View 1 (cartoon, one colour):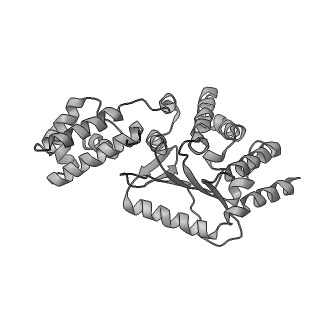
View 2 (spheres, one colour):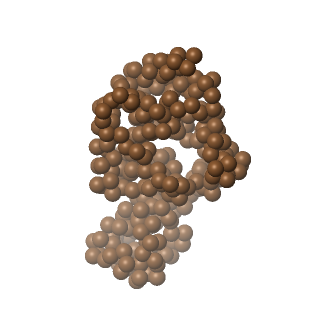
View 3 (cartoon, one colour):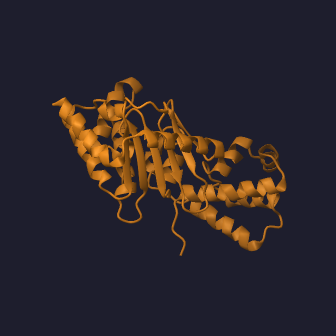
Length: 289
């Protein structure tokens, strides 16, 4: 039996198939969108899986236009993907508190098999304690003019996100590289940081979690922005997410993904071996004493 997948994953599958039909028909986004009364931007979001088509009639009209001779079995497959793409996802209560494009990335995380992440400034989100996460949002609260509810919702989302690596059933394989600055930067006080180091040490004890530190004194490439690469076991291409100012970029473009993979691999080769992560964090903690 096929694994049950989240709505975002199904939207991506459906969008990929619709894009194949459009390209096979030899139509541009503009041509197909105009024929159906859509905007090209709307159709592009549907093809990427960012937006769904709430009305089945719109999907059927699109398929009829792009592939009028599509076999019945293929049509039923697309309609089933559409039905599954409309289901509620667990992060939906937090959508109003997420930056642009983050809901798509959060949805895809649920069905990724491997996550590779680089963090130059802070402890990676999946490794953060509740206190560390709250301290970060609290520090930004007066500057970003956010509310207490915004802070608490994001902290709750961050903690629920950790279930990706702590769940007993098919956990996500996590490979993280953090710049030395990310673990030396004081957030919330020394006791909080020591607890955060203990959390990282505990999580690195999991077989599917690998954490490396990139020291200051190593001469190598260092990406200025944090980024995440998601890999999937089935039909979807890898996706790369990059943090931008108050928003994020999410793409499956082959060049962008390959560039991110090359950067990750270069930093991974230069970083401390995973076995030295805990030792390095203990050294930092002792220096603070």
